[in-house]
Structure formats: C-alpha cells, structure tokens
Length: 355
Ligand code: MLT
Image 1 (cartoon, rainbow, N blue to C red):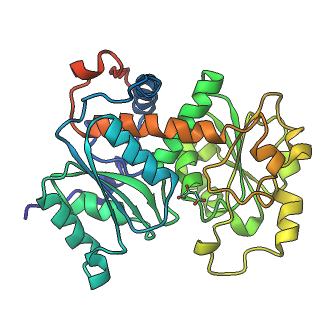
Image 2 (spheres, rainbow, N blue to C red):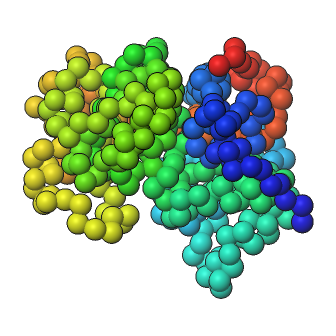
Image 3 (cartoon, helix red, strand yellow):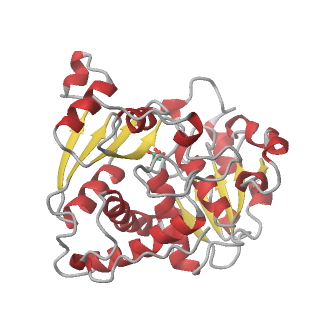
C-alpha cells in the first residue's frame, strides 16, 4: 500500500516560518493551517449551504456517488448527527461506524481500520478519537481518503471552530476587532484550541479566562518565541471573569471536561460557579448585544446559568444549525467537486483573494 510521507511541518500545515501552506486542501485537521482567505471561503460556501437547508426539500445531488464514513471512538450527539445530515443533504452515502461493535473491540489498530475503510473506496473519513493526533496518523498514512478531524483528545475540533466563526460573522458581519472571551476549562478543550487559532487569525481579540489551573499558561510563555505577527501572540489570559468580560462582544462558555482531567484542578465546584459561571450579573458587564456561545453539551448551572443558556443573548441553537451548513461546505470541498458544480448553482463560489 502506497503511503505519503510528508515532513512534520507539512503535517502541521505550516511552513518553516510558521505560515500556513497554501494549496488544495485534502484534509481538515485543525485551523492552524487555514489561511484567512480559506476561512472566508468556507464561511461563504456555508452561506450557500444554509440556503439549501432552508428549502422545503433539503436535498441536492452535489455528492451523489461519494461515500463518507464517520468513525467515532468517542461519544457525540451534535457533531455526529450534523456530519451525517450534511452528507445526506448533499446526497452522499454516509456510513456511521463507532469503536464499539467494530473490529476495534478485537484489537484492530486505528491504522488498520483506516486502511480497511480506504480499501473500500471511501472518499472521506470523519474521525473523532480520544487521543490527540489520531486524525494526523490517518492523514499521513492513507493516500486516497480525505480526513476530517471531528475532535481529537484535547487537541483540536476545527469544524466546531468554523461553525463558531460562521455564527459570529453572521451576527456581526465581521470577525475583525471583536473581543471574544473564552471561559472555563480551556486547558482540556479542543474547541478552545481551534477557536483560538480561528478567531486570532481572523483578527479578533481573544481573551482566555478561568482558574489558572485550567488555563494553558504555556501559550503565554511561548509568546516571546512566537514573534509579534504570529496569530497567537496577541492572545490574552485573565483569571478574573468580571474583569475579562468587560466590553466583550462574544462570551464562549466551556464545559468542565471531567473525563479528561486526571488531577484535582478545582478548589470546589461551588467556588468555580461563584467565580467563573456565565450568569446575568456578569453578562451585564459585556457589550450591549453581546453573544453567548457554548459548544455543548452544557452543564447548566455550572459553567452557564439556565437563564443565560436559554436567554435571548444565547446563540447556542444557531451554532448547532450552522454546524450542518459548515460541514456541508467542508465535505463538498474535500470531495473534490469543482466549485462550479451545476447541481448547486452558484451556492458555492470560490472567493480566493490571497491571504
Ligand atoms: C467536544 O467534543 O469537544 C465538544 O463539542 C465540547 C465538549 O465536549 O465539551
């Protein structure tokens, strides 16, 4: 079996100077290798896809004859269903596979499972895995399948970040200059990591907030080395939510990822709620019209109060709705269909305009 062997930097999608590598995309592994114009392209395509989703009959033949496998080694509601719906609306054949009930239970390795799926002529594998880096292994070793990372360990969740960018851009008409506060268990959140890349790259001001034990402080320590024009060099950290939330345009609450924490990171849940819960009083300090986001699943009453979670500032359901459109756009691009495919009319356009 032929296998690609790219340099380590290429796998990270980065040139030696840290800039993303341009060129046709085969995989979606994280947002660190997305240029601003590529992100804009995805958001623009997703707009066309959401028009398809608004039709009475939500079905276009764009991916007829393509096969997508969702390979989930971890629980999921939103991401899994969203990918399945996205593929089906585009007329792809979507096959769902989870580790339980598969040959994984008989000891088959991820690589051999991937090679087996590839041998069946599948076009795209959407993978979720508890180990950071698992999608990269498949991307490196499979040469005829596109890989989409649907969440790997604490590392990345790029499609969630793209749907978050889409949701904010839809509300504000821009991403540049907005203040985003990401609050909670940033340390164990793959959603936060991908959003940091995406929002920082698009010119937003990103502030990370939470108990210092749940913040990736190494990110700040590495700042000197990153250089001023690195997208992550501008990311701020503040352990005081009352201060961080001042003037925020977007507040993104994160779940405490107890399944990924292997040490006592919190003094007590009560203390956590008192200092870091997104609630009415705190949101009063944000900008008028500030949005509240949450990737789900929520633990209402812990990281977010019920009144905020179901209040008029929350765009949590819109995030879910937009996730289908964004994943349609990604599947479409990765399946190698020409942007001018007649089946979609002009719903998918190429908006490349350099970086
Ligand atoms: C994830 O899979 O990372 C979720 O979307 C967020 C979470 O589990 O808290």
